[in-house]
Every structure is written in C-alpha cells, then in structure tokens.
Image (cartoon, rainbow, N blue to C red; front, side, top):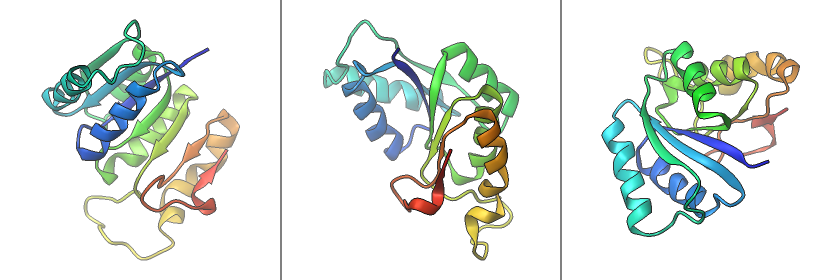
Length: 161
C-alpha cells in the first residue's frame, strides 16, 4: 500500500521536498502540502506540474490551509488526507504540535530542526531532551516512527521508534 504524505510548510525546503515526493509518487501515494499561506503551497504545486515532476498523474497533489500550532486542526488534516507520513518543514516552533498530532493519529513523523519555543530561542543543550525526547515513550507506545532533525542535524541520537 502506498503511503500518503502530508508536507507541512511551503518554504524553500518544502519546495524541494515536494518535488522529490512528486517524483517518487509511484512509491508514495497522494501528496498534500499544508501551510499557513495556502497560496505558497499552490505555487509549489504549480511548479511541480509545470516541470512535469509528478510521476503518477492519477495520484492526488493538493494543498490545504493549516495552522499547525492547532493540534486538533493538524489531526483533522492528517485524517482527512489519509496521510501515513507527515514531513514537518514549517518553523521550528511548530514541531511539538505536529509531533503530538502524529502521535494521536499513529503516523510517521519527520522534521528538519530542533524544536524551539518562540520565547526561548537558542536554549542550552541537550536540545532534543528539552522537548522531543520527552515524547519518546508515547511514540513507542503508539508505534510512531519519529525522525528528528533529518537533513540539517541528522544522527543516531535523533531517530527513534
């Protein structure tokens, strides 16, 4: 069964990620790009279509408006899109909200940055222990694979099942 993907965010990294997911949508399933600014997600989709990067045209490629700080709205988006993989490429301060939604929905989670609270930017280490690692047992209990800091600060210490 192909895994539907929800990409949260519509910046530069999300743009590249969406193109790569579209190029692999024979392995992946439908792709939804969700952002606070839906028009940015729509621009990414238009670029994917213009460059003909959508490998399987029958699969859905669509956008949604999403305030990812709203856990319930994120849960609803995951469920409505049937996503089994959530790639969080939004600002670092939404990580815990999106991870919480993934735990509730029992879907895989990937992000590219260490969580930051808006009022505590540049905290002292151990960064992951401050937030993400506190959810480790809940991820394990729910069967959620969480890959933290993929791409920017990857390593064994930031991935757990």
